Length: 303
Image (cartoon, rainbow, N blue to C red; front, side, top):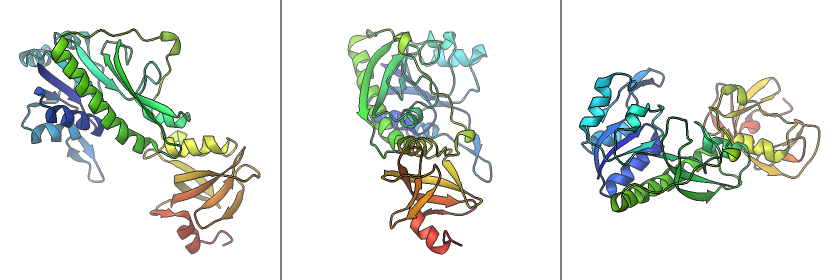
């Protein structure tokens, strides 16, 4: 079975490595064009491109599929199936029609919940205790295709979105490999329609979301901090200074929302609308990431 893989970031690279290790014939890889990155804005290859080149697989990086030549290039690879993971483009119908078995996508949520570009982050932001990955057929509408299979996993009460993504990448890679194996053995696979009454969306995260709202409950504040890791990172103001908040815990305590309740050996405790959180790791503007007790040892709260 000839597979064309389409993907760009780390989660996609994890999936590509898995299907290569499991012996699938990947005849071509599509990924986003190299983009400027870092302080020097140096053109940087995607993790998927690096993985493909290391494996000696041809790499294609079209800006889009508007040109017929780009679609012909895909046809010339004669794919039986396209495996798509966080490619970063909605594929036109003329691309979806190329592989005989269709295009299969791995999405980092249990669909129909959290369609969109930030599913695992919103699962954490919303305080979910479980999420997963979905294998589905791609159609023109975003994340709306028929569901082939699902794999679920619990979300830890202190797990960040970044840590969750690392686990979902492995879970998604395993699901993709199992799904491709089923295609190779059975041809076109049965799938079920999504329940449109249960659809929810996970829009891109924005920096405007960063400030912590202390009138929320301690659990909501904690979920906010976890969900915005590693980007764009929750923030708070303290004595006229802006801080990034990297890690919190829910603790017992009460007071006016935003009131400092005290500094312990493990962090700075702050009252919320209901309960309190302990800020354990923070970063002053222009400074480095530090444990809160260490920071306030050098910058006393009373100072």
